[in-house]
Amino acid sequence: MRRWSLGACVAMALAASSHAQSPTNTMPKDRDVLFWTQDQRDAAFRATEKVTQVNTIHAGGQVHPLGQGKPLKISMDLAAYMASQRNAGLVIVQNGKIRFEKYALDYGPEGRWTSFSVAKSLTSSLVGAAIKDGYIKSLDDKVSRYIPGLRGSAYDDVSVRQLLTMTSGVKWNEDYTDRNSDVALFDRQPPEPGEDITVSYMKKLPREAPADSKWVYKTGETNLIGVLVSSATGKTLSAYLSEKIWKPYGMEGDAIWMLGRTGHEIAGCCISARLRDYARFGMFILGGGKAGGNEVLPADWLPHATTKQADIGQPGRGYGYQWWTNDDGSFAAQGIFGQGIFIDPARKLVIASNGNWPTATDPEGVGKQREEMYRAVQKAIDAEGRP
Image 1: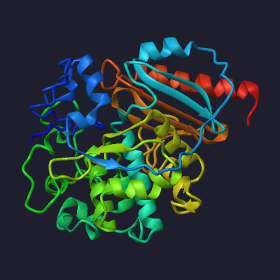
Image 2 (image 1 turned 90 degrees about the vertical axis):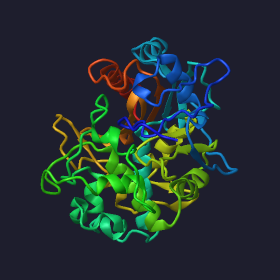
Image 3 (image 1 turned 135 degrees about the horizontal axis):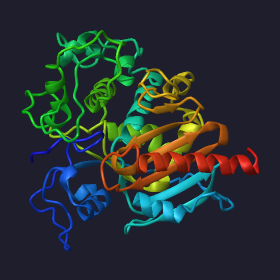
Image 4 (image 1 turned 180 degrees about the vertical axis):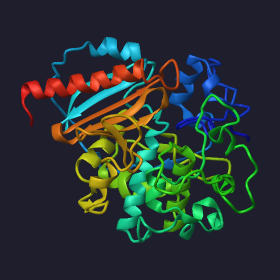
């Protein structure tokens, strides 16, 4: 089955099989998510397992409770906001309690919705877990120590830390509208025997800047991080995520993770999970990376992972270890078409949202509106007093 690779998060493999039509014929046949109709995206985002191969991220028996808090008094109409965003779901959890929760687009609390690049922040956390477990010795190790196929390439001199911060200096084009960009091409070329397709493509890329001198957003590098974690641990990403976070933290439902052409999870994209479980992952991070009474992440991991490690050229913002950071201490996981987990430690706040924006990215439109919603929630919490 051939897959197109397209997006920030995307679509490296949102490929429709020849039998992937739903009874209502809304499931897409075309392999390019950016050219699907809105109705096709609505259907596919709810049911990734119907359009591509996946691994299951198993939940356990214990469910982490989410209490019911008092309704949040906010200055904006959240129902109208959701409609303008084409949100499938929005949940606001503050101090461990749900302050707002609403669903739309034929999606509900027991359904899964694709995350796109929100998955990057989960992949980053698996690196932290692998360091805690001793599978990865140091962030300063060269990537080629764990992925031998990269030896002799531009990545031979790149550290694990530089992959996490996307500062490798290796040339990459992440233009989602260009079928000849790297993000569109790397999952379409034939892999070398016995090698993950990401490695086969990335090892041929040239260097454009010294390592650690330039930030460029590169989904392919997150995919390399996933290969690194699997190689170091000897486990699939789905199994390791289930073992370290999904089961011990008490996620409510099984999640799924999309696979690339060579059978490896696409680490930079496309976990599908319940909205409340995305919020629970935010709470896991907010709580310092503890699950089942155990420290899953090194003590110094989150202070570095969730604060600016790379300058992205935007005032007040930066990039950590696969997290978008804000100078006020908040940070977020973000995926195209409106997926996100926003975390504000000062207010003990997690906002998880799923959606289907009219376009993949729109920083000055719905993207700006989402930032305004985050600020409005922060102000509403401040008005009633910090917890």
